[in-house]
Length: 137
Image (cartoon, rainbow, N blue to C red):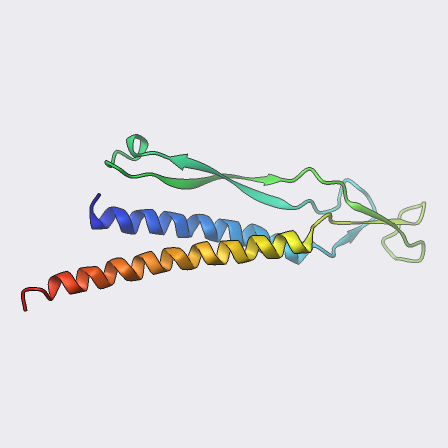
């Protein structure tokens, strides 16, 4: 595996983490949205990743991931009785997104750490390349 391949793997992994972080941000931004029906309540999202192997990339010894789609999680919205709320239905219920804030925060921390690890890989390979170039000086 050449140096360019290391950069490719790290870049693809970082791209996957950006997709993941964007879905987390969407979930957090919509966590407190309220609607008057179960059907229109926000449903949390999760990216689906697929491993891409060396033979598919036509590069020896390389495998990475691609985000292939964003899935809607099948969670029931939180039904709350608030008859005076402007968004309440005829029976006085509102529906909130079933976003688990703790789960989203854990996902965000994990995503941030994985992104940081890929930055460290890029920094390490850059430093090793610079040291290699300075050997002959």
